[in-house]
Amino acid sequence: MNEIRFDDLEALRAQISPDFGPWGPELEVSQAMIDAFAELTGDRQWIHVDVERAKRESPFGTTIAHGFLTLGLLAKLRPPGTYAIVGYGNVLNYGSDGLRFLGAIPSGSRIHARSRLADAQPKNNGTLVTSEVSVHVVGNEKPALVYKGLILYQAPKTRA
Image (tube, helix red, strand yellow):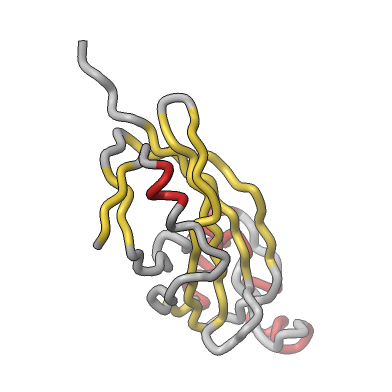
């Protein structure tokens, strides 16, 4: 795997592509996972947790995953990379430049994700990297979630 220093903007920008990379691992979104998320967050809307009602009333015929559960699973869905960012002191989640929930993820579905590097910009004491991630139900061309995440790679602290 190619290693790129966090502050090597030229090398990072060479990885920017309009095309998404390979698919990451598949993960089943089970009802137990959905229920645990509902319990943790207090979001117990029937479309997520009431299996019998969802069978009767949901346009999906079953319960569906919470959008924020899907977002929270991104670390588990991380696609394989062709490069590794190295040499930084720490990494901070800097936020998002966009998040869209474009489709439902029915309980029991398998999902996977792919990503691309969208931008790399210098910041005080580091580099701000923007990655775009697309999460799909396996077999669906249309994504269920699209996320543009911002990650700040900071320089190691110098010791006096």
